[in-house]
Image 1 (cartoon, rainbow, N blue to C red):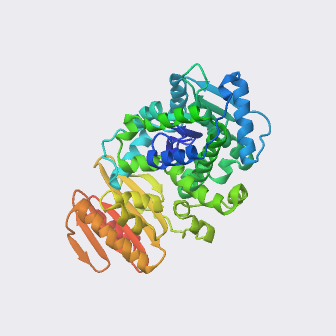
Image 2 (cartoon, rainbow, N blue to C red):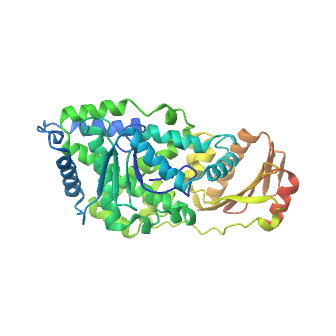
Image 3 (cartoon, rainbow, N blue to C red):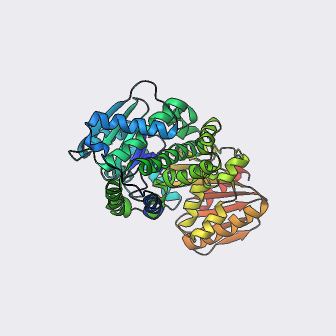
Length: 445
């Protein structure tokens, strides 16, 4: 999990474990149209009434039974035992907050906020750290911690209710994944989010998508009609107010690994069942582009390597690097979609070939410099991005102040320029024209 397991501009430093959010991991509660459709399909195929639900068994036996059912569905075994913890809401929140406080500081959240503000996704005064703290108390139902081989499940009722049982199935699948393939070695780790965030996001989508896909199978195989009705009713209640009232891009990114990961896993499972998924772990997806377009994963369409920019020599004293990452296809889409239509943003982002992104901040001037460098699959894709970004810039910044050669610039509270070549694009944000020219001379694009 990470609260960056909801992968928000990757609070990339925080990555302790794997979570289930808002019922049926995430999908029951928030991805309501997507997941309720899946539940309705499941319900139509649950024609027989099952008796003797597992909740009549002693609790340890219920957990053993769910584990056995998950192993049978996936065809994997677990060597040894895992630590199983059923917690009240207060206990689970306390556990999560301890992990957050140990791995993600208010200062890091402040830098992430400034980076997100430069991308046009958050107000610079947004209290991101408090948002994370509050979000935990509202959305997390359970987690698997790979460092301790431990599962933590929310269970507020005297009985082990149907939501807790389905959540346990999801989290137990994470334990199987981790033991068999070592998710940190795959790239889903604190270090992985720092060095290759696109790969980490793709691995996260694979493991969460598979756990959610298996959870759906577990529901179909093991719940009776009354239990299923309870689960659907809880799903229809929807998420809490905090995530529901968050910006749309944040909601969508929060659930990306579950919804888009589910779609990715479903496509590969349809081609070859669980054996096809086993093969994916030997050569996992390494970009959000592959998750969004499974056919590109199958074709081996690898991201282009984009050199990272180092701007320290171009900036005066007082500037500090606050973010260095990649804007993959998914994040490119999210940024564009804030100021153009979703269809336009989706089409423009789909030609993504690679990206390198860096942001600096000057505390005394409260100023930001940001550079994002894209490569595109073809000149046509680059042209489509240029047209989309021009509309984005006009809507966000106003009428362009200058259009010259391979450069178009908007002068608003900051100066933003888009430079382009045959199949590359460069977005530069600077506080004034002097700083802009210093950065452009240094980049020599």
